[in-house]
Length: 219
Image (tube, rainbow, N blue to C red; front, side, top):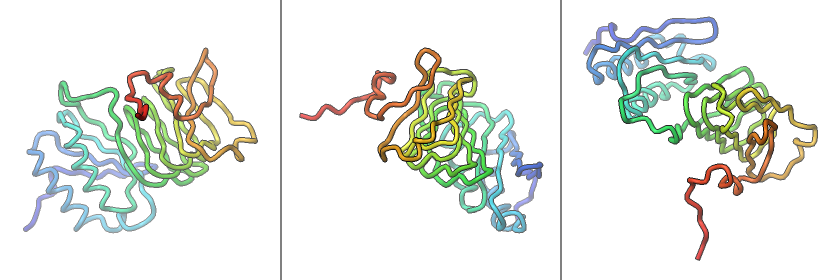
């Protein structure tokens, strides 16, 4: 069966690709064409080195499930690294405290940006960067740069299994870690702002800032 390429346009930019997805067609048709294009077209750019991808959904209202369906198709191509997704949110669906989950590895020169709170499963290597409007939680080593609260949210935090960054930034406050960070304990920590200064603490003390968290107290 031939799928007409009218709902998905792929545009090359200086540092990656932009996927322009039609916001008027039925959503299932959009998914079908996206899947078809990745499986049968553009193999010259989909089988090479890592490519940064920005997804633009236009004025189509989408749920988190819709976004995940699109991301799952794109993730089937191992060299595509999703950098951003632009779309309208379904009214009443957005949860400002929700965590968006993504896995992978950020290498030198790669940038991952997310609107909201992000849980990243993997390592951020030196030269790699994560930027986020909300909190950043990394189940892995942070050896690159992380910037939380990029829109000015000073309540944002940055947590990592191994906190050994080249730079941390929360809102407009920048911390360049001391040399001894390379030999810190191998326990999960988080960075936060207190009176405008960057502070580091053990992850179990996060409840001091996130008092709405459910806390395990044992029996």
